[in-house]
Length: 275
Image (cartoon, rainbow, N blue to C red; front, side, top):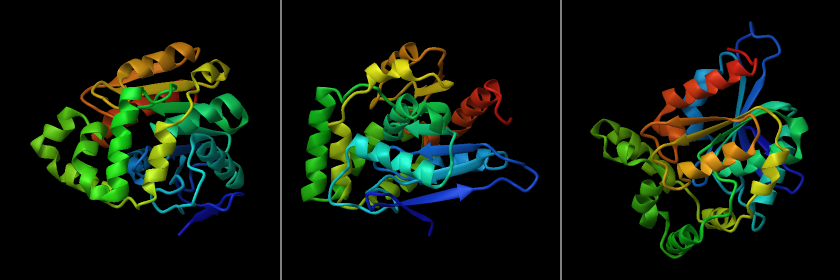
């Protein structure tokens, strides 16, 4: 199992998918997942891009197959993990795609360590602190997880993570079951990661320092980070491109993989990356 040990002693699980031998000096795309998930939420993106790019996924501390330290789950620490991973595995400068929590990491990288990024792709994310109404709701759900278990919140969390279209489509029943099962895999330590997300500091004031090509993607049914949040990021990052994914929610990489892949491909081609 590929593991990268950070300077702070956290073991991060990662996967590197190399293109075929005919692709010389491939560019690298690093995918950074959202809260409660793992790098597996980018399965469809890996399949779409691994023939032309070196595609990397990794699990944040305390999530997926990465180790769960006793402390250090705030966004600054998770950002430091990403810096260590990119530098340690010599992945930069890379195209960095972050969804939700991964977007919190991506914005920090682009504004503070532009040498590590070739471009930035932000999916279903926000540059602001968590709204108070969300903090109250998410804290309650987190308390239930702490004292009862993750199973107790699967249904309400699914309604936060996915669009109404996805949740009510009979043809997507198997997909829903699959991702419910993924939610249930979370360890008790997930409560620390949730706390780090809902108490995070905003980085809106840092967005003006982002100068690399940037794509902002949002599902038009996202209720966790509503489309207005994406518009706000787009307006602050000069020259950024905004794309809206119809009938997708907060987990657009899973809900609408073809549309997300098309948006990423169009963006990469537009900035002169591989087709």
